[in-house]
Image (cartoon, rainbow, N blue to C red; front, side, top):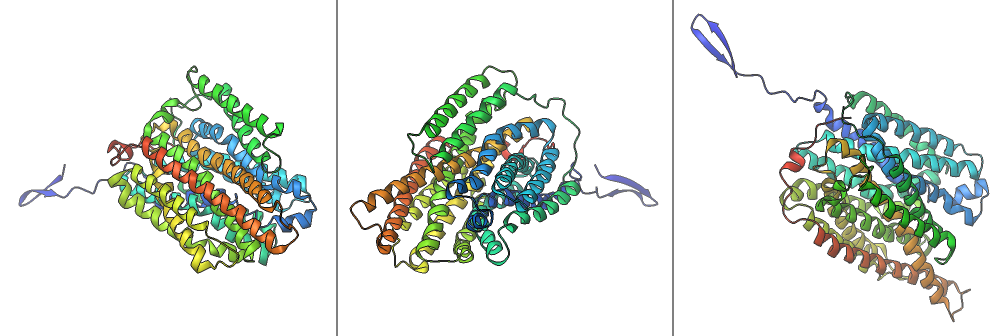
Length: 506
């Protein structure tokens, strides 16, 4: 109601002051987005930033080709198997606290890795980075989902976040190439220390503290053990498949144990009073379909990053820096599409059509890439597919992340966010091993009866293996379009979702 003042002329109405947002930190929300985005960029680029530096690190520290994969696997193993645990822990101790602990841990692990005097210390540091990443990732996404509660602003925030999640691997390749070529492989790790320090300062100053909630969930210890061990078995089994046959006990044994433990975990979640991952989070159609979309996209995306990276460097003889630059048009297309999809299209049509179209575009781009040859040029044969795939990924990532965290209760925000990251990470681990195994088999089959010592034959065999991987990635995207199209609900989002988002609790 307007205030009333009395003057000599009688009562006079005074305009009411503008309504204030109940959260005094609301004005800082875009700066908070910058801090969250910085942390997310560090998490996703670290999946690939070290890859390009591996040859230099191997020469410096003197480890074997067989040991080389553990520099990559140690990170994904710790990250993928601990995401759900730390997603729930962040709901228990507070997302701001978990975010800060994760940033500090990531900085310390990166400093250790950059200064590593031998292979063992480097692997341990990469594993510790994965642990810290598992703390950071769900806390970052749940902070985002609870900081932005208005539909239009939430869409913009998720467009930025989804763009970072989708393009971070390509940015990591570019940054890794620049740091390795012009400085030293150790700077692919040391760079995280600087990023972390900026993010820690921003988080401490900008992200508000909130009092503990009376209904914060208890930690489900048996569920935590079951799901962490199950995810470890899945990730380790697929990682082992990169260097061992699928028939090896270290491959199928861990995969079988992982599946069994996850089945037991699902059963336990229906029995315990305080489930780690309440099935209500998974069984809502839009959330479940979004998790599946992130999982399948994680598998298919590695068809681009892994094999196109090989093709550009080994066949077309691109430098590490030029390889990273070659992916930038895809990153730009992804960012633009993610913004348009979540700010303009998602509020009007929902996630179903966007994810379906994005999957089809991903499949189309992969099919287009199967035309590569020894004489292919970037502009004629690679740029177009990258742009198509970038548009497709932008249409998937941001809307799926938005739908996957919309309408969830405040005390489930951390575990819902962790499930998004888990789906993408496990998908990426499976994609790396599965597509690499298929490509290796195709390479061996191609060389049967041919002169394997001939350089042209070797190059054509490598291209054949990449093409087989692209066809499989296209099939995965095509299947994803059908499956996710059937699961996701048609129509624009429920007005209660994100407008009536849960109360913010850091």
